[in-house]
Length: 161
Image (cartoon, rainbow, N blue to C red; front, side, top):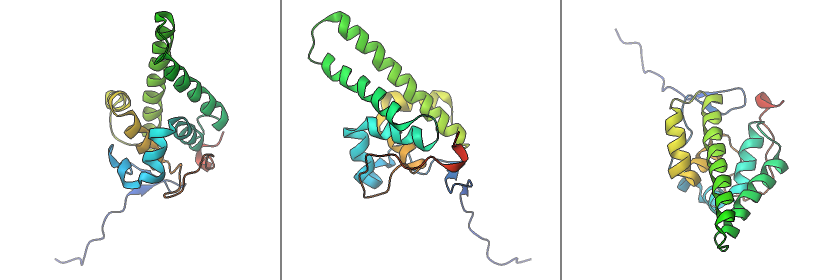
């Protein structure tokens, strides 16, 4: 019995129009939108982190921007400072930043019901930090393709506190 052509399954989207159940792009999909995604996560990761957290209502843009900027500046200073105590402190700050990125990826995956594991989240944050951040930024639509913006897009209505 022929029931006619079958419709192609469309990805699930939530009320905000964000894809659920799968990542919008693969982990190395950041190269699909080099401007602004790849450029921002590579040269201005603080901005991308703040944009993603703001978009999902997980933090205020300015607070996250300043905190992550502090972490990155301390890391850059540590590259030139020979004092072992300072490098130890920066190492701890770097580990805290890694934990935050791990948690952020876990949070985004959970909010949008994306299959995966906490181990995968940690490995992506550790070995592919920029690509992982770009994947999250694309997924939550924290940027407009082709347009480098340094402010945050509005928090998704479903995630406003």
